[in-house]
Image (tube, rainbow, N blue to C red; front, top):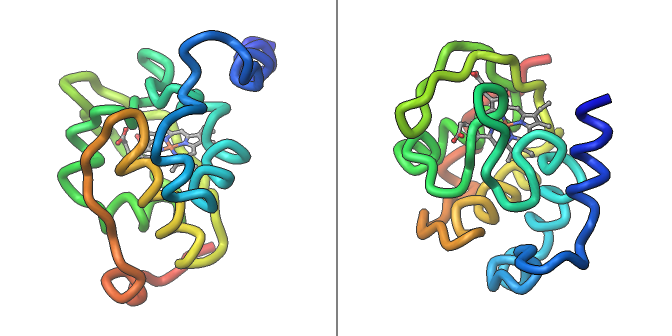
Length: 133
Ligand code: HEC
């Protein structure tokens, strides 16, 4: 119920201050599309997540510390206790994408969306990640 309300809210692209004019949307269009289809329900359109439930991607020290880990996470999911910007999260994140290319596309988007300056990850750097289902 709460999640539905949040999703409806996330779908409102016409409110002021939405990140629709974010340069990352133009630079990483495929990643932006994957983000908006799959990640917004939890991490929100503004990348801030939901306190105590879904960690932020905007300004996340955890994301910036290890890009390859982020690719692994969207390919295989994640369920462990993690600390992001000093706050603890431990809900499971289900896997989100089926291919290394989709994973690289969406991670390169989040590394650069909302003012993030995280650089990029290359497919060559992550092709050894095994997809586990
Ligand atoms: C069902 C909710 C949900 C969805 C959908 C989801 N995530 Fe997550 N995400 C989480 C949770 C919960 C965690 C914390 C996982 C843990 O504790 O192991 C997390 C953690 C992360 C992290 C590492 C922590 C951080 O804040 O830097 C990254 C990066 C991430 N998600 C990216 C994504 C991307 C990209 C997508 C879309 C392709 C996505 N997530 C979709 C729930 C979700």
